[in-house]
Length: 492
Image 1 (cartoon, rainbow, N blue to C red):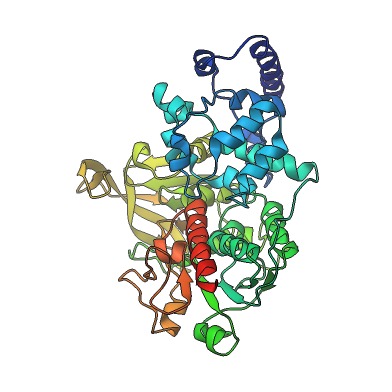
Image 2 (cartoon, rainbow, N blue to C red):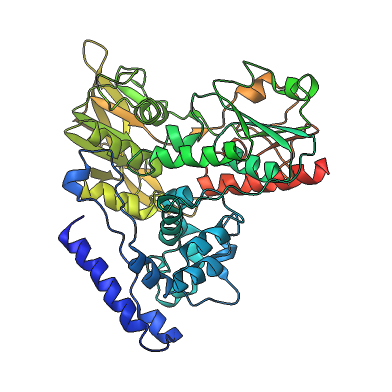
């Protein structure tokens, strides 16, 4: 931690003491500035896999919590997909009762250390915060995600993690397909009611996108492992390296293995490509493959990892979402000399979290806005040598509300690169739908469900990215909770 960050923490303690010397009125609360998140120095972190954001100190957390107005209508709760009692847990932080705050969060969210790090709070709970609206900027809202992370980390570092209560055994069995955020959440809520739960996971580790997609420097894998261990302590069984649809047909779980219900949470694991000439050259990767090699298989541990990673000097990342930011920042840490993000709109239209974009810029990643490739050029060995890049300008808004990129004719230029990472989104995993023809899907391959997450097959439910397409951890968790409620009611 830098001297500047230590001073910020000291200032938080002094400001907190000053505030407590007199009654804290709403006007005073509105004058408290948002607490900045301490972080590693950019020049240091671009060369390591350690977590970038370092977390609040207790004084910073309590000072940030004092900014909450405890609104009676709690608009922040309506913005939360799992409906956490946000004023309730922040109120506990105001009092210094950090473990009490965690207990409130865990009534509806068993993954606070994860959600506090990777959820897009600026488009959910913080977007509706009264403080942010009054100060005319979501960045000035109460930093709900940072507070959630703080109390979750406090619970873990103080060895105070409690295993949720489990009701008496009902003798009912539920199968969860996929150990991602939707599956883990569904499993926890179903197990609480006393049903036996088995999670079937295709990979050798549980966590889904949280272990194969999100880098260590943004979400330490030890946290995901800890959450899985809580489920194991509750009595949830994990069957790893088990690919439902290949190892075992989906319907066999119901008709032959005796499960009373099945939840499908297999995610969006099929990468999209741009379908331009040259995408089959050596050195072109989907973000899925690139990040899975680096995150799940630890390819950055050169000489010790069981998988290789492609050596790169000049890397082009195509896309403007969080996955593109993760890919670009990972490439830098894997030794690339230059990493450029090509995005055919401007920064204002980028779907990536503002914090992730800022971190990328701080680390030296270059953004080429209003640019997109038309073809990948190779050398005489079939390896990537360059991109032909077309320039764009913004036209009228499209159906998403963002201004449509319009190509500028004759603006093509050739830019040298040796690696291209395509990060333009994912499609739903097609394996289960292809091997289970009774399962209704839409034209995008998403499983069709009703308002209770029930599929076209009796006793089979689904949620997360396999239903939504590529979404967020917290939205997947919300669907897992909704499915668990329906399953529990059905089994009663």
